[in-house]
Structure formats: C-alpha cells, structure tokens
Amino acid sequence: MKIFHSDDHRLHDSAGELFGGLLVPPHESPRRVDMILDRLRLETLGEVLTPEAFGIEPVRRVHDDGFLAFLQGIWGEWKAIGYEGDVIPTIWPSRRLGVLRLPEHPDGKVGYYALAGETAIAEGTWRAARASVDVALSAQKAVAGGDRLSFALCRPPGHHAAGDMYGGFCFLNNAAIVAQAFRDQGRARVAVLDVDFHHGNGTQEIFYRRGDVFYASLHGHPLDAFPHFLCYADETGEGPGEGCNANYPLRAGTDFGRWAEALDDARRRIAGFGAEALVVSLGVDTYKDDPISSFLLDSPDYLTIGARIAALGLPTVMVMEGGYAVEDIGVNVANVLKGFLDAANAGGAS
Image (tube, rainbow, N blue to C red; front, side):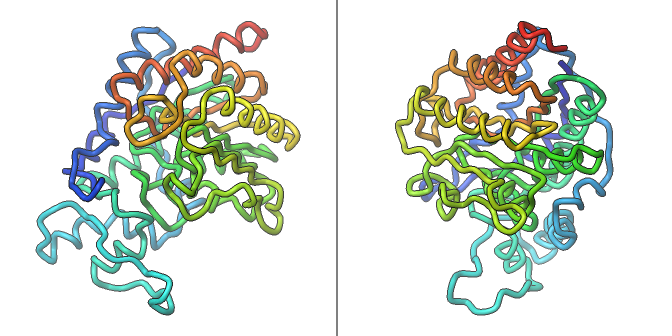
C-alpha cells in the first residue's frame, strides 16, 4: 500500500477555533497527522511517499472559479484593510437578507463563501489545501495504475467543502476531486463512502444531481450534529442523481452494532450501483472518546470496518477526513487500513 503525505499541511495553522463561545486551540491540528504517521510507520503498513503536483485543473472540475480565487486571495485582502487576526466570518446571507450577491468587502466575501464560523483561514491555508489535493490525487493515480488500496493522508480535510463553500475545517473537497478524476479517466461509475461522524455536505452537494457518482454517508443525525441543516435520509438525489445519494443519520450514542448495520446497507447499495472504483472519506471521529462527536465505536471496531470495505472488492482510495481524539487517532486509522489489507490479502487480492 502506498501512503501519500505532504509536510505542507503545517502551513495551515490557525490561531484558534470558535467553539462553545470561546476561541480555543483548533481541534483540527497538525498534531493529528503526526500521530497518524507515527502509527503507520510503527505498523509498517506501507511506504510514505511525497505527492506529485497536479495543478489547478482537477480542482476546477468540482469547484467554482470564483470560490478558488477567493481562497487564494482572501488572506491578502484581509490584511490589506488592516485586520490583524486570521480570516473568520462574522456575517452570513440569512434567509431574509434578499437576493444573494457577492460583496466586495472582505467581511462580506468571507460570509458569502463560508459554511460556518469555526473554520479560520490562516496565511498558509491556500498552499496547504492545494498540497492536500495533490496528496489525494497522487493516491488516486496509484490506484488508477493498478494498486488495490492507497491512503491519502490529507490535511486540511475536505468533505464539507462544496462547489463554492468552505467550512467544517475543509477548503477543497479532496474526496470529490478524486472521484471526478476516476470519472475523467474513464471509470463509468464511482462510489464515495463517507464514514466520518459528520455528514459530507460538500460531497453530497457536488454530486447530488449526477447519476455517475454514488454517495453514501453514515453520520450523526442533523437534529444534534453538524452541519445540522441537511443530511436527512430522504435526501436521495435529484434529476439524473435520483437514487444515487444514501444518507444514514444516526443518533447520539450509536454503538458499533447499529453503525455496522448502516455500513452493510451502504455496501449493498454501492455494489448494486455497479461502482468501478471506491473513494472512502475516512473519518475516525466515530470513536467513543472523540471530543466533538457522540458515537461509541472502539479501536478494534475499525479493523472490522476496514475488512468490510475491502469485501466490496473495489480499487479503493482512502482519503483522510476527521478524527479529533488525537492520542488515539493513529491507532484507529491504522486499524482501518490493516483490516482492509488483511481482508484483501486473505481473499487473494493484490
């Protein structure tokens, strides 16, 4: 298995995160990657490789040009008007503010493109996000070239980033970019399986009206979990995408038995869709001790998750998303990968 990683992720290092009415140290921190890398090397699960540079065109396949220009330029605009801290939104286009138009002032621009207020943009965020995409596309290239599994250790994560919105610690949607790359290279049908605790609203938005990419998400129920305003079970796709979106909202306190039932149904749906490649949005914030989630999965459960994903028999790219119990994140990520590799090898897969 090839593992791709870039030290440029450290360039995204914001001063704080708005949480519980306070500016606290960010849950999504560089140390998360350090802990994962340490565990993967300890387990000798694969060679850690530097990503290739793929340029902006694969990103433009799923993201709006105006949004990309915003992400690239907002730090300079923010500083030019005299603001001293990180870029943090303070106003949004609410339900009663009329026709939505893009403002010129940086405060307005940030609110126009931001999904939520917890995600700060720092000086190096754009470069880190671009490097994260290169990590994901390098993993995709390995699998497109014949590997059974590749792991993209992405940071920042991506699944909350929509075509023209950022938030939830995400700026560019790595998993969606990988799925689109598979499609552009000739795979007729691709599936994205999102096992992060938080719904991948961005991935859903990008593919919701398309019939060539199937999206399945197991996540905290929107009644009590971010992003709150969508990700219900009745969101099944629109137009050509009808039936190609499967949401499994689960309530706080969900244990592995209930969670695994949803996973098995998602696997059945993916198999029935006829996917030719699989992208996994790999979040391990379903863990029982995660500080911003509410499921009860334990470390051994992630071995089973990996094995059940492998049973689909598909060429698979795993893309790192969430997981904020930092002391245990390495074990949990490694267990998913080990579970997959052990099952694949037992089945005679390469």
